[in-house]
Image 1 (cartoon, rainbow, N blue to C red):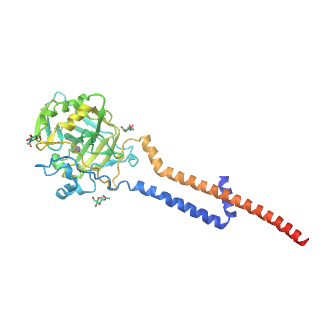
Image 2: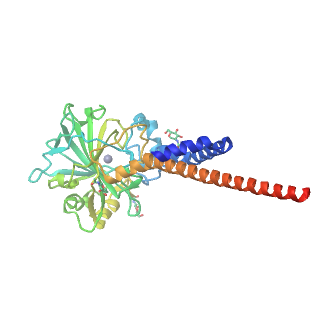
Image 3: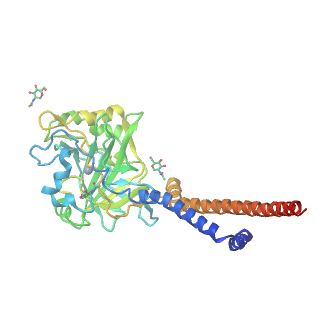
Length: 375
Ligand SMILES: *[C@@H]1O[C@H](CO)[C@@H](O)[C@H](O)[C@H]1NC(C)=O
Ligand SMILES: *[C@@H]1O[C@H](CO)[C@@H](O)[C@H](O)[C@H]1NC(C)=O
Ligand SMILES: *[C@@H]1O[C@H](CO)[C@@H](O)[C@H](O)[C@H]1NC(C)=O
Ligand SMILES: [Zn+2]
């Protein structure tokens, strides 16, 4: 650009003093702005994430509860590992990976088949699933279903386990599958490629969700800890979002002790909605222990520790944020630098003008004075 060339020439013509002033100014600007960089890159620090103090009780008999999450690791070593779940999914930090294969489910429609066991195990509401339900595409192996369960909060506290940009959803469903190359889920649970969990967020909608009703309408029967009932089979596919195409993928763990780091997580971007009343049934009905309500059964987000979160989709939001972090900062510096240069040259130009004016008048004065005194 010709402007750049002229700028270069002007610099050469400018005084050294001014150049060093300009340099100092630029460095100062850099220093002022660098904390912004530092801040955004250290967001993964665990500082704020380890919020605790959840369920009142529920540690009876099962040796762990949600109100002492920090102590899980003393009994269950893996809970202190470096690939733990859940995590906060920072949408601007995920990498779009167009080659993530689409997920294909098979045998999820259980209509007309034998009933399913629904139980309150003291930690969650769980539905046993037959291994005829499977993920047939999306992974290197076929994964067979074992159970699905939920995580929730209270009517005041949203209780999803994963968070999106640090925001919890009211609840979350997990459909747990194990790698068909292993004999059973117990054997698979300790293997790095052992488990595949499909997770989806549950929000509040205007209408009752008929499919969730198949489970939630029976919840009173399992209000006591360690109680179970059999519910009619239905199409379990309908508990997941309409589209399974948009999801986040990362390597993590069971979110409850023993926290084995054997889960390939798929967290769907699209959410499910249930009515406020249905959600309240989940939040208020179940008991853990004799008189404690089973609620806030979600683990705090865990450190990523350098793990990459992949996304099967690209959102405009995502692209914009990527731009805002790196490029916009660079652009801002560029503009700032150009402005600084411009101001400097304006200043230098005016100095030069003043200087030449001053020397003109001085000459005149001297000349006049000289003539006066001489005369
Ligand atoms: C982060 O976690 C580690 C290990 O869990 C802990 O030692 C450290 O104090 C935590 N840092 C902050 C800022 O909480
Ligand atoms: C449960 O709570 C009720 C009322 O608070 C009390 O009467 C009852 O004895 C409690 N039951 C147990 C088993 O603690
Ligand atoms: C992902 O989910 C968010 C929140 O529900 C939604 O606003 C967004 O449109 C979704 N992204 C895509 C690509 O569908
Ligand atoms: Zn779970």
